[in-house]
Length: 247
Length: 247
Image 1 (cartoon, chains in turn cyan, green):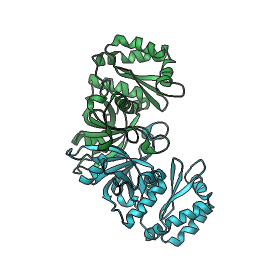
Image 2 (tube, each protein chain N blue to C red; image 1 turned 120 degrees about the vertical axis):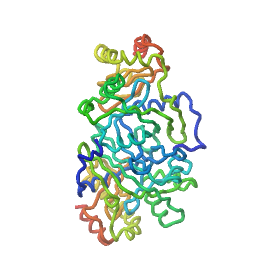
Image 3 (tube, each protein chain N blue to C red; image 1 turned 180 degrees about the vertical axis):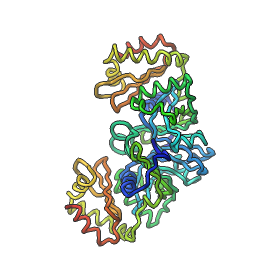
Image 4 (cartoon, chains in turn green, purple; image 1 turned 45 degrees about the vertical axis):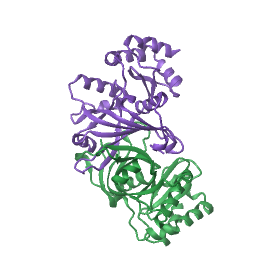
């Protein structure tokens, strides 16, 4: 099963890509923290998952919840993503990421960015995202382990999950406009990307995230991640790449 | 969301029943432990879930996995069950159980019992259940919290999740025979129970567990839990109850 030292494989690019897709296409995650005032008892609950433009996972949580109180006392936490499909639940790939949680200050550029991305990914969060007891945390990866199915175990570093490109910040600035343009003027593109590159089915696909490493695609309850072959190095590369992917 | 002190409801019988069903109908769970040699870093992975006859959750894990190594150093752990259905992942009920893991010694009556029940619930586990590096752990509940959907948060004690009846041990002894009889001679009963009492669909249902508090029903990837109105107090009550439930 998971994490056998004897079957740990060397982390290669296909494994990195699989791990990134497992993380970036997850709508929700199991979220483990250290229970406050428990002398270290683990506590696992469920959270909605968002992503920052540099690949850092983001959560939106209430100050009154156990996990948020836990993070205030100990920022160390762990995420589990990867859907349980048909058949044996252990036959499906899943990713464990151990992280350090950093609260996102309100009224910061960072807050505006993660809020916008989170709500675009989870439109219903609009209902409570601005409640005074709700806060965003960036879950900065420390390390990860992936079980890609029986006998396919990998250990990973934070760098394997983060997006490294000089274009990260500039792409974040044009992201909302580019998404609005694509979804309005090239409304069929999202569906084409999802079906062609992500094995998706169904209609009504929309782009809900663009970063240097790929696209987030949503349709109803489905969330897919299209990873580019290599991260964009500048914003001017975005338009030709989107066009090329459209075929 | 989860665990708001201000919205914690008083635990009543419907909440207890909901929590028991969330735990007992789960094929797998997110499983949080304290990573070994990490000074307390949480680590969450996925496990197949079984149940002992007294309602104690059971897992089957490899000695080489991180979670098993973690339990050897610190037996405190936490389970998350509750499937993510359609729509908002946070709108679906889920249960967090904090437990103390106790390894089940091989060659014990306990081992024979949990092994038999686990394999009946997860037939594919037959392939590795007897591998020398695999062990069963009983995860003895300490406390639990349930989020039964928005605004429905409950805190629970171990007793809310365990099966208390003088018939537990005796029922365990006749369980295999009773199940074989029902599945062979009343093959349509399991489907009737699943459809009538558990809102299930589909065919090929079989009984895969009988204990003092209810029935475990399986069909392909589906696992349903039929909770009796009250636990059986003696084995002689089983037959008339199964007949009555058949209507």
